[in-house]
Every structure is written in C-alpha cells, then in structure tokens.
Length: 256
Ligand SMILES: [Zn+2]
Image (tube, rainbow, N blue to C red; front, side, top):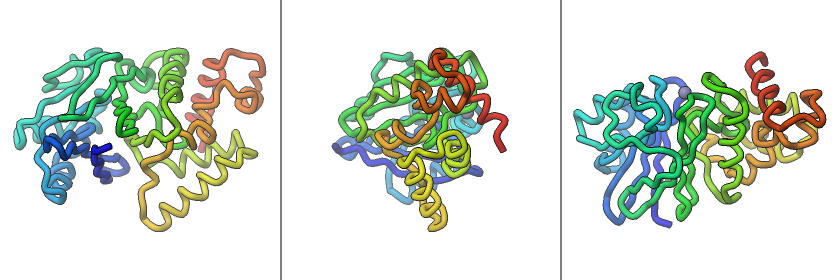
C-alpha cells in the first residue's frame, strides 16, 4: 500500500493523474490530456515523470505525449491494438499483460467499446483502478467503436474487482451521469445517496473522483445491465444483459 495518486482537472473536464511509487521515485502520468497541466502537477509534487500509461487513442488523452516525452524522456505504454493511432508508443501492451511502475504492478484489463483497443490499469495491492473513458462514476463511455457484447464483458471484468477498489476515470461527468442514472433507476437508494454526495462535492468545488467500486456496482446503471430493474426500465425483461446494456447506452446517448 504505497502508491500515491495525484488528481487534477485539465482541458475542460478531463482528469489528469500522476501515480507515484515512493520506493523508487517512478512516476506515471495516466493518459496525457495536457502536457502543461501534467508538468504543473509534477512541479507541485516535486516528482519526475518516468512513464506515461495510455488508455486509448482519443486526442484528449494523447495530445500531451510528444511534449511530455520531449521534456522528461518518459516511456510511453499503451494499447497494442491502437498502436497505429498513438504516436510515440514505446511499449505496446495487451489485456492480460502486467505493467510495472517501480514496485507497483498494474494488470492490463481489456475494456473495448468506447474504442476497440481501450484498456484499464489495475493495481491490486494498492486497490487503484484507472478506467480512462471505459467506466465513469455512475456512467460509462459512449460506445464509439464495436458492439454492446464486448463492452459489457469489459465492464463485467471491472465489476469483478474488489469493492474497496478506487476508480480513477477520465472525466468529471458524475453529475450529468447521475441525472440519467436517476431517470432509469429512481428507486435505488445507493444511487440517490451517491448523486447527493456528488452534488455536494461539486458545490464545494471538490472532485467526485476517486469513486469506490463497491458503490458503483450498486449505483451505476451500466454495471447493472443484468439486474431485473434495468431490464424492466429498458422494457427488455428476459433479454440478454448485453442487449439491456446496449439499450441503456443508446438511451443515455439520447438523454438530455
Ligand atoms: Zn475517449
């Protein structure tokens, strides 16, 4: 239990993260939304960047890579399946691989659907999960690439992790996600409580992240596509959970 995570907002609503292993001094930026914001966080902490862990190819997660590498000489790790879309990738990894940051170990988990090659990074010892745009608090990423089945399978792999796991996701979308979640699951007491907590956090200008995975399992509709409540909300009782998930995702796309 030694990894330190620094959290900051950059661009509009992207989360930037630094993961720091005190034993070795190794420090990773999780995604590279904004080189200036990452560098400011490094200076604030007095840490030196050694690594960049990329979750997926979108520009708001990769645009800072070139400037960060030029300034710090960091090693860039990211999804092998998107290697042709991520300039400067040094170490391509696939689901099932392990990535080291000094004494910390991250399992690479496949979370396709927002993009086909999207990966999450999970440190079991420190109970830290970086989900990029695959899983948000009370929501999930828009399904830009692929079909509901593999996206639902990836979210189930995240759901299988321990309740105590802290979820660090790619965007501050929690309040907007809460509005949709409450529209499909209004009787869910855990959701009502989490939505109220997030409102207080934002009112006080605090982050809603990290989220506790145990709470997400109970409150996030996209982790509950196999529940009777979500099937009923989508008028898909008895249907395959992946179909319920796909319907939820489509309903969220059209929700305002
Ligand atoms: Zn994205």
